[in-house]
Image: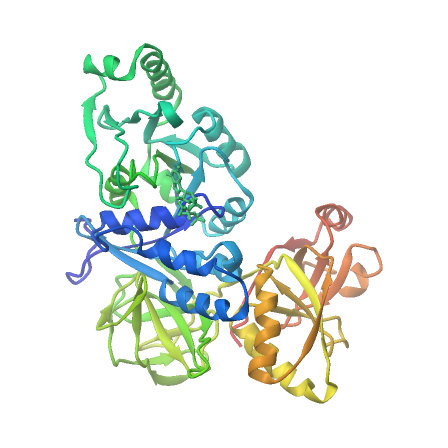
Length: 532
Ligand code: G4P
């Protein structure tokens, strides 16, 4: 058992998987739950995903929201450790929540399809992890299918993402020739056996020492030679794994496997549980808050609307950062300066919710929210402080909203304000033009949700006019004002909800021009949530 157990509770490891859609995140999640003994047959997670993708009409969206809520965090035990796997929604569900969830994780597993390499969403999510130097382990997936050369894949990771790769295992063959993976640590080869049940149950892999003469026979001449040459190269040229450099986010340990066939999942977990970092300290107005602090503290990283019409409340997800939470406990809401009782705290596992009796640093609690929580809120006992703000991320889609019936404007603004508090949409406006705001979202689907909810919950019909911007950049530095930047053709010069200066750019090119024209200003892709 890792040695960081505080007050005798099971140590926590809180992580998220970052990947591009279809790389196998659902499959790997399921296999981790399977090996952790949290489910007995793979299939449960996949079934809910199938429903998610059935159609994107509103009724389905509602169901989809329900599922997103229930799968916000999944727990599984492994080797005396409790893993909390935070769900990072992808596909149509991709949104700012996906980015923000990463701020609540202590490390990430980057999942890459060996046939595709580093794809766009992986790149974006990787950059978000970089903001906090979150340690990242890499799992190269789908070895049972033909893929790209392993050296080429690692070079791509290093060049595109700027992180050194340290292979922990090494693949032997791929696709029809896939024979297994070599564990560099134990100098043994885990032999691949195709499962007959599509990986629903755990596989019993056979291991053989790399210097066992039988290996040559098993692999055949050409694969054996390739294996020898490649591992020699890796051993000679590669650097050894260093936990310290991993924790600083400087290197990524690389694992190879096939989640679908369960191959390589257990060796991955076996190593991951040893080096995944324990819950870390968090910056706050009183300095670093460490998990060993007795004072209970947590911050809200996600607010999710309840789409069930019978229950209009929301669920706020908070990550425990220090101390111990017990059910029914009174806590202080730092922003409101109010004592509150966290009602019906729950933890969510796959499709089931269960009441929480106690929670420790690294755990995530979902509490029903009558409308009092905002992203970034701090909950605590004892002396008041607040955690440093959770970032806002640059939206990637923009649109203007017009209200069909001007007499509903008040309801419209109230609705927008609430929806922006939930963090699904960001509101920008040119000074004096607040009546016709520009909305920004990270995932296109959020616009559909927005239009529907304004109508459904606030009785406001709106017309959405897409705008051609691609990036929002928060502009800071001496001389950063609208007058200086306007009229130069960069894009729209606007303000965010907190009146910060933002330029909405149509392209990378125009952004580059602005950066060159104003070398002393910073154009940042993130901003912080205001605590006021
Ligand atoms: P995602 O959550 O990252 O979007 O990916 P997901 O797990 O849904 O996997 C996407 C597709 O890739 C699925 O196929 C899945 O079975 C397949 N897959 C995942 N891991 C592996 C692997 O290790 N090897 C191979 N060969 N395939 C893998 P699908 O056809 O879209 O769905 P299904 O019919 O298998 O359910």
